[in-house]
Image (tube, rainbow, N blue to C red; front, side, top):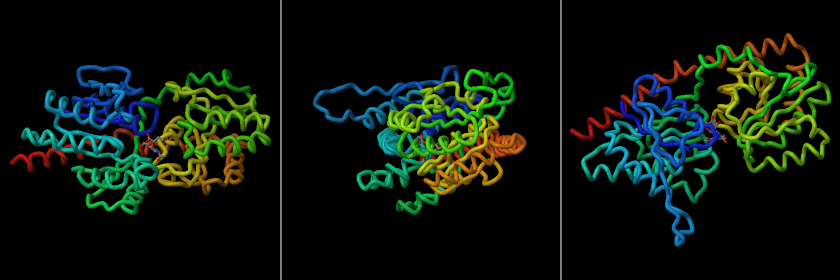
Length: 380
Ligand code: GMT
């Protein structure tokens, strides 16, 4: 099958899912075409089955806002026509589903019918999409998609609650390629980051407000008073500077390492003992799943779809958003006893297998097959 994938190419869950999905589909023999403004960060190698088409938006001084949707829909029309794409899969409703629908309509004028699958990832619904400025366009693009998927049951429920949706929404959770992690536990260079007696606690995100970065620091501050520990802060974003200041205020700047964006997430997780994800909202929490497959238990909030991933008392603990005291107590409970930590680590990795790529990929392939039937029906 020839599949065009539209996604955000930067660090961020939706882009990671879209890229890993494209790579897996290409490995299965499908021809995958990424259409976006930059080569996706996790897409290192292009080959016969993986193509990248850059959307460029020429700067024009007259425009206060450069029209990305226009450039994207034009690029989609050209790509779909030239490569005879069978299915268009857009990740993140804003503005991808909207631009995708425009491309679809333009192609229809030429007698080409391209089925569109839209995958909802979270903030396109729970934060940005529900804003009155965007809501009509988001509702329209979801309803005009041929097939809609969401990455958790919770996100599906929120979408149905917040928008007037006429379409079915199919839940296809985030996934992880478990085979990649088989050997990753052997070469952990833990001593680079902490002394032998110190536990390593990690947070990875794009440091947006929704991640509640100050909570991460406050939880760690409470933990390090009881257990020798280091905190690794991985990622870049608007809350980073404030977080560094908070560490100075609390006098823990020598125990917190800000590592910036990294392509070596698995290496970092490999020597981590605990992962913190106290988010305000989180449709799934791919970062938690990545931690779990690397044998790292998770202390998280119970927001959104996180309880579908992190299992209370098994792979970690969940608390109400903002309850940093309870999160710190639970972290200490796991870290203070090595045998308890080992049990949580084993549980974490075992549970991560629920989201093995091998189980999830066929669900997407089935969706594409269904989408192709729409095309057939519309054309005849
Ligand atoms: O969480 C982020 O800041 C990135 C965001 C995105 O849109 O790329 O991630 C969302 O999609 C991921 C992949 O489906 C989910 O695992 C994340 O939970 C979700 N983030 C939020 O809902 C805040």
